Image (tube, rainbow, N blue to C red; front, side):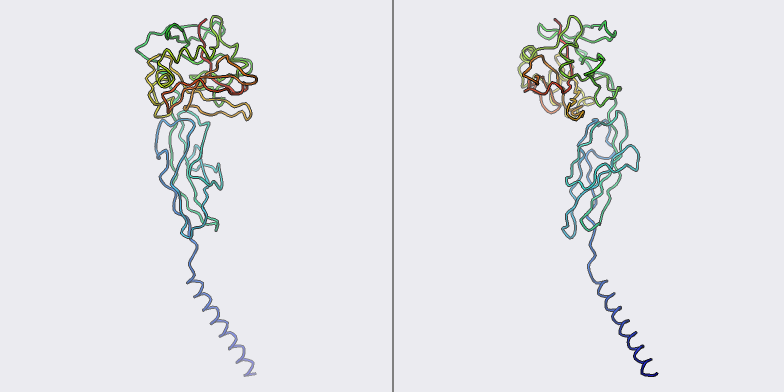
Length: 316
C-alpha cells in the first residue's frame, strides 16, 4: 500500500515539474505582434469641400515579424462606418459616388496573416456643396430660353461662335442621366449617350463638330492653354488644383465626368469635363476634354457612343 501511494505521489510530482517547465518555456517564447497603426490619412481628418470622388490614402503599415500586411477599409456616413473592402493590398483606395455636403467617416484596420490586427483612428471629411455655377463676372453673357421646358441658359460669344455657357439639362425619355443619378447635381447638366446627344439641342442650336471644337481651341490660343481659358475658376466643382483655370473665355466648363455603358458606372466628376462632338467612326464618337490638372484643351480619340458625356450646344 505504501509503495502504491509513493508511486502516485511521485507521478504527480513529475507531472507538476513538467507543467512548470512547459509554462516557463511558453512564457519565454516571443509573441507574434500586430502591425503598426494606420496613420497619415489623405484627405486629412476634418478636411472640407472634398470632391465627390476621392482617392483615399494612408501610410504603409509594417509588421514586426515581417509578415504580409493587408487592410480592411471602412467608410460611411456614421462614426461607426461599415466595412466596404476587406483584404486590400494597397495603401490607396478609390471611393466614388459620394453625396454633396455630407460628412463621411473612414478608418483602416491593418492585419497580418497571423490574425493580428491594429485599427487606426476614425477619420472624417466633408464633401463639397452643390453650389451654383461661377461665371466670369467680367464677361457679358446673353441668355436663351429653351421652349421645350422653359429652362434658361447663359450664352457666350467666343470669336465668331456663340456657345451655351452651361451644360445642357434637358430631360429626355431615355439616353440621359444626372451624374450618379443624383438630381441634386443638376448644376452640371445631364450626361447623354451619343445617340441622344446628336439631336438633343434645341431648335437653332446644334451639337458641335470636332472641327468646331478645334476652332474654339484655336481661338483661345491652342490646345496647350485653351483648357485653362475654358474652365470655371474654383475648386468647389473642380478638384484642386484646377490648373491654370481663369475662364477668360466665359465658356465656364464644368467637370461632369462620364457614364460608362458597360457597367452603368459614373466616373470623373470634379476631375474632367467631356463634351460630345458629331464626329463618328463606326460605333464610336469623338469628344473634347478638359481636366483638373492641365491647362490643355484636347480633342481626344473616340469613345463608344453608348457612353454618356456632357453636351454644349453651339448656335446655328
